Image (cartoon, rainbow, N blue to C red; front, side, top):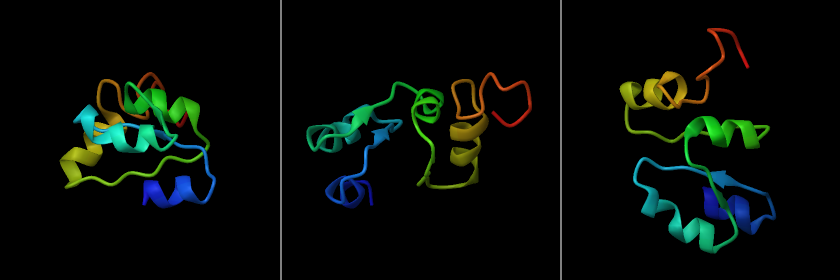
Length: 75
């Protein structure tokens, strides 16, 4: 999905729990975020593709998740 978005001319910032999985996308022009929170700060839209609900909870509400440092409110 990310490669297709890049091919269509969209700017992307990507993150993966296994950083090397982003290498090909970065080589194609994506920016690499250090954490899900950093990605969210750089983007208007956040898409997630994860394996299960606990993984989603970690990406969204974990220590460096999309909603980290939001004080419980929407950022």
